[in-house]
Structures are given as structure tokens and as C-alpha cells.
Length: 195
Image 1 (tube, helix red, strand yellow):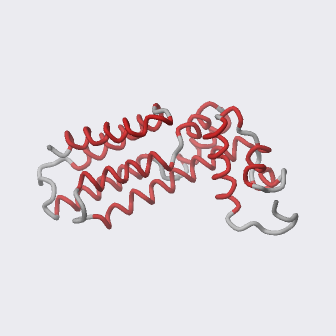
Image 2 (cartoon, helix red, strand yellow):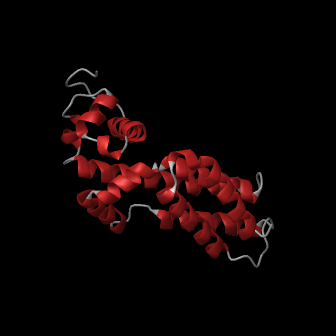
Image 3 (cartoon, rainbow, N blue to C red):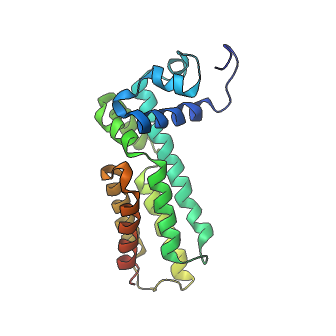
């Protein structure tokens, strides 16, 4: 355990990662501030020192993971002209699905105070699926300019369909369905990209 009074580098991420492990291993009902701090190997009260309570912590975890996902989607621009368009999009969808554990998102939706705090974060400009959709649209438009997808393709509609499907898969898939999710995404991309 970290010594009392000693600053812990990247404490937020340490607590967030610990919460994800608790939920993945023991289920959403097992998520308590004590479970998180024990998993993170921190003092019992450290979560309440940095967050007003478990609901704010859960909401901040969800907001953090959405922001991370948006940054990962923005990195698609660097992939223009590399691999295939389908492979690049498949990669970002896989990353998005891994970065937002369904149980954590579900937890934020079932705790009214956490859901309210999350919605307020989105209203205040925290990145969410719309930021991811814009990043995918920009990537597809760049691939159009490069001639790798037809000029007549509706980049915005393709991005909406892909991000909407990713959202659906995120909210409905179980832990054992990763293979099915990848297959579903490949089929969708084949339809959206015309082959």
C-alpha cells in the first residue's frame, strides 16, 4: 500500500483502472469505494478525498473513457492511405469497445446521480459519441480525397452507422461476445464501404 501522505502519480487512472478490474471480475454490484481503493492498493479514504462520492467517481470514469475513445478516434487521421479503410475502421471500433467496458457504462446508467453527472459532463462539452463520429467522418473524407473510397460516398452517414452500431454493441454485448462483435463489425463495414 502507498504510504500515507505520499502523492500517488496518476491517481485518477490508478483508481479508474482498479474500478474496471473490480467490475470485470466481480460484477457491477461489487463496485464500492472500498473495493476500488483495495484493488488500487491505496488508503481507504483516498477516493472520497478526490471525488464527492462513488456516483461522481463512476461518472468521471465514464467521461474519462469517452474522452480517451475520442482521442483514439482522432488518431484515425494518421492512418489515411495505410492498410485498408475497412481495417483502419475495424481497428478503431475494436479499440472503442475495449476502452469502455459495458458493465461500467451500464453502472453509470443505473445509478441516477452518476447518470446525471455524466449527462451534465456531456452537456458541458465532454467528448462523447458525437466527437467520435466527427473524427470518423473526417477520416473518411480524407480517404475520399485520397481516392480510397468513392467520391460519392456519404462519409457522414457511414460514420453515423458505424458509431451507432458501435454504441449498440457496447451497450448490449456480453464479455464472451468479442468474436461475434468483430464479425458483426466486419459485415457492417463491407456493406457501408460497398464490398
